[in-house]
Every structure is written in structure tokens, then in C-alpha cells.
Length: 247
Image 1: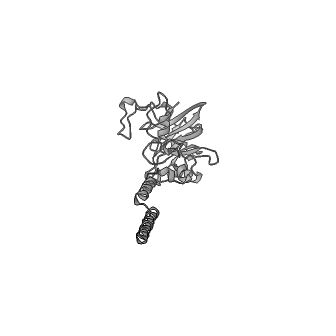
Image 2: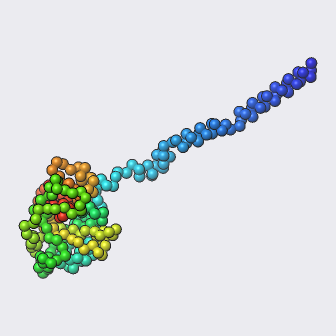
Image 3: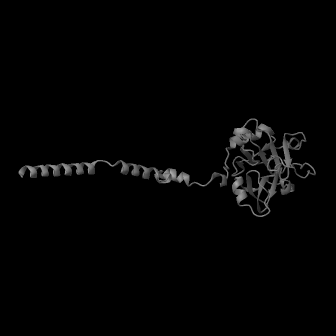
């Protein structure tokens, strides 16, 4: 009788030890479930505050374009083509802005300037390397004729080449070339714009300008230059062949 009782007690102790060991051992199923829960956690919940702030930043395509080029770089760009025939006020605020104004993917420069003393004949030379234009006389291209697959659009023929006067305030556009943009020594295509040198110059990316456009706004190809001109707010835009003024 004692032997049977002792045997039963030993069996009970062995069973209890087995149950304790099973309870203490890690459960593979539970571990797998925990790993799956961690992997399923959204990435944003694991990001640092700095990374979350970057993710929440607005789309750069809708923001104002950088608008403070260095005066020394502007001077070099003008000297490259105009060879001293124009000058600009390096100390005046907001006289030069940058953006991809003709929509070719290369950064351009727009800068207010004036004819250099004694150089007016050079600016009006028919064989000069720049294109003289008055954006206020340019008619926007007909939307029905606009070809999105063409970089250059057809416009109504110009009546005559505007003449630059010694007292004119000018706006010069230097089109960029390749990755270096308007800094590139080969960036030699420029427009000499008459009657559109205003105040409060501010460049805006094409996407943002087109999104905020009201009825009647021309179809935009590149970034635009906002400014105040004779008391009116408007912007300069690339028509596909030259620059026009819209207000």
C-alpha cells in the first residue's frame, strides 16, 4: 500500500514539473505572431520626428522658385552675352530671379537691367545675339493650335522689332543650357524685353501657377514671373516662342 502511494506521488510530481516546463518555454506561435505585428506596423509610426517632418513637407513643384541669385553670377551671365552693353543694380533688392521659365528642364535667369551709356546702337543691332521683344504686344497662342508635343509654338507674325531707348528699363532673360542652367558658359540664348521691368518680382513654379490660374489664363509651359507693372499685378510667361504678359 505504501509502495503504491509513493509511486502515485512521484508520478504527480513528474506531471507537475512537465507542466511548469511547458509554461516557461517560449511559444513559437506566439513569437511569430509578435513578429508579424511588428512588421505590420505602419512605417510612419517607426520614423523619427525629423523623418516625419520631411514626409509632411509640401510638394516643391507648387512652391515659389528660388529667387536670390548671387550678384557676381548675374554679372558674369550678362557679360557673357552682352559684353558690357547692359548694366544692373547689384544692390537693389529682387532685381534678379531664377526658374525654368521656358519649361525645358534647365534653370533660367531673369534680371532687370538698363542700357549702358553709349551702347544703345549695339542693343538695337539687327544682327545681335539677343531677341528684342515687347511682351505686352504679344498675343497668346490659340489654345486650339497648341501642340503639347512641340517645344516651340506658332505665333502671329510680329509687326516690327521694338527699339530700345537709352532711358528704357529692361528685363533680360538668359535661358539655361543643360544641367548647369544659366551658369553654363554655353548659355547664350537671351531675350531683351521692353516695357515689362516692374517691381515685386517673384518667380513661381508652373504647377502652382497653373493650379491657381483663373479663367482666361494662357496654358503655361514653364514657370512664371509675377510682378507689379504700372499698378497692376500680373506675370510673364513663355508662350512657346517668346514671352507674353498676362494680368
